[in-house]
Length: 341
Image 1 (cartoon, rainbow, N blue to C red):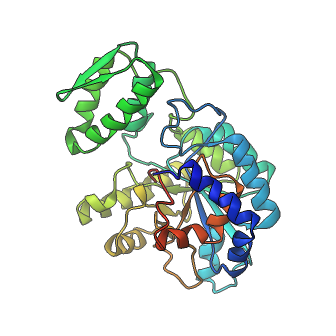
Image 2: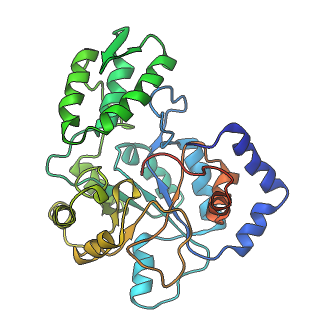
Image 3: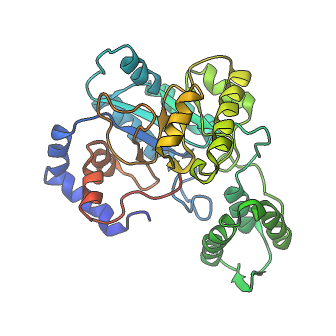
């Protein structure tokens, strides 16, 4: 759950009274930020219900703050420093972007270049990778549909307003998401009932093509694996996960050339066995969905990250970077992070 307005306002108060500044002074460890896309559309309506895509104006504020107050470095610089036993620069911060939405190319890339902030983009590598992930296909279809209601699994979902469509999306994502191998056929039936295809091209929903991924690589961004498909590796048999990660790395090498590639566990889900499998598959390191800062000498295959969402203003970003939000979460101040990694 994303923090509500009251909790968002509380970070401004914490900033004004100096609590965040104190947390920054006391902080120990390297923050790795996890974005999921940068949109040029400020009015999200139904296009950013999960609040994962950050508006470009806010992203620019983030980058200006990071480049002036921190030392943005690449993910590869960190694991290389660990491998070669070199000191890591003070106030280092790492920017990562999951999923590989096309808006990384159309919006984020130019801003990253403007502020000289390196970033790693984690892309899906499956041979049958779709133009869109299933959640985005469903959201787009419901947004574009002209039918007034939908009957599904004994329930009727009104679709006559933005609010009713948002409610339907929330319920249907939960219902369809739990269908496992039957999900794809269920999705096709839903799309047919909605009477519309996936909709017009949309960089906030469309995934990067390999040609576009190579363009990002050539522009200086690092590319990593988000596995072959956006499913939790922890829900797959260990040998299946091993094969998937091995093939994912091979696909990156085939499409982009030999290099050291990092891994982002889909949904941030991992366990010790998967961490070992990722290492054996030849990845340089792996990032999780566990919130927190990374201490020198930590396991390179269980790196923690800090989720950045659409509602993260500078006070909230500062609270994340200092570890304050993680502390508030541990002491029971409520949910701090939301969305799917």
